[in-house]
Length: 264
Image 1 (cartoon, rainbow, N blue to C red):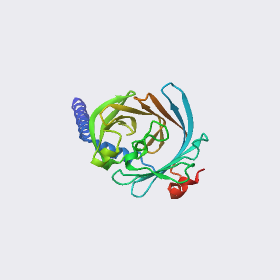
Image 2: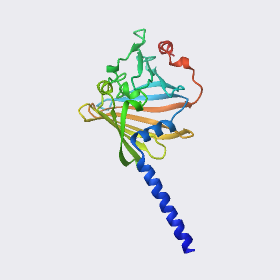
Image 3: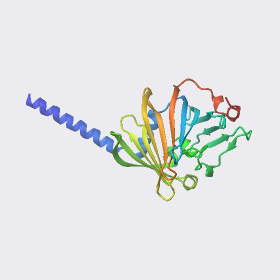
Image 4: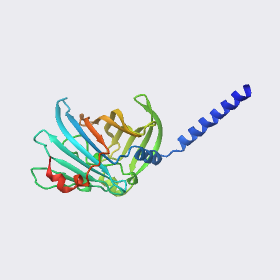
């Protein structure tokens, strides 16, 4: 009996050691690839309430809809359209992900009458008065950054990988508004619950927090609340999901310049 207990204990010890060594053998890019794999969907649709909070604590509400579709090459197309209030209604941003991170983005302002292409150097600018820049709204381009696993920390009481992302190419360094970013990625479902953004001088500029995570099918998790805080301007942009649909078979036609200017 004692021999059997000893063997069981030794087996458990070896299993734990194997798991620990496997986990420690993971690199930053391994974690990011795993995240991309587990959280991928064919398409998504969300309606979100957006609240802009200024430095004095005053709030302004907007409503947006967001469409996302992943193609056969694992590249995403994203359409974000404002539904209200009237002064921003039908303003829309279309993003086409490209290999290497040099994505195409077009902004449609109804008053202008035709979409404006966002230059690579302009992607560091803020989107429609929010605390999100155009580059914050792009998919994570794994081949445009180097990822370093800094270690493990708890975030809101849950164990996370801590990953540092630094632009890989000189062009990405010039076009980005950040010298580096840090991610806190949950170890159980691989969702990024916290992101930090450091300006070109290396100073912490913004913090994004994703909360109220929900399983939306299989290994896919999504937050029902996202807050982006600008520490310098003392402003916040808060997104709350009011409706969500996954894998509904969205048409490719949604992600065209024609649809961008069409409005709702």
